[in-house]
Image (tube, rainbow, N blue to C red; front, side, top):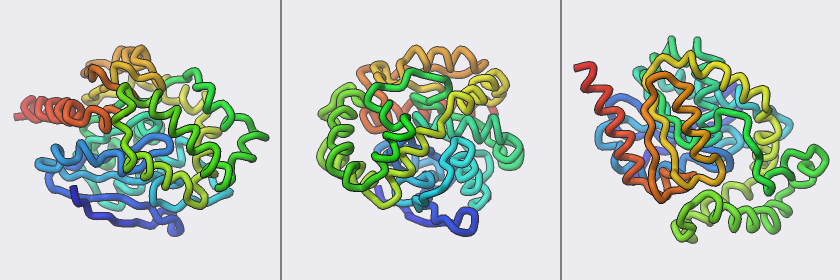
Length: 291
């Protein structure tokens, strides 16, 4: 699918890359750790027929600026999301967050809700294999959380020739139920993002600054969500187990729970048809309720 690639200036100094295509009520997509707007390419083909689709590269990821000596907390990522929504003056929005992007969306809605929910009228959320609670960090990511060691990892050579190949192999097994879904084109795209100047710093700092306290700020407020929510999960997610999705669905009153069978942590890339259909069904039901 061909999309319109654009840039807006965040805080008058950082270029944020985003795609904006289609027409109708807007759906805003927020990617996960180490990912980019590229990840939404498959499900966009179905959704763009009816909706305006906006997907951004968070600061530090994809094609957006990657400043060093900068803050990469959930709050700061959420502020970038809000700034884009304000820049485009979007209304009646559905916001989709995957993995870390789910935590960003929830931070924007719950912690910074005055800006996101009231001013711009967010009508619904889609939380896809979303980070919302303290969780046991996979062993291979613990290195990024150790202050002295993670400084050694903020190095293009180390990332490009040591870390990236290792994470690529591990990621195929942990993030996908069927690792054959990760073709050379996908692997090359994601490894290209992480090898850019500043990407290593952003990755390490985002992990470091996604603190238990920032996740508690989300989980403590989940019962206050009062708009329709779709909680969608890959049945065989090894990164954020389906039990976390069940808890999230339980904590959000009235949410809709969908499990994608034979699917891992990235339903939008591994099972795009089922994922797009689940989102379309959720949004169609909302529209029918208001007719």
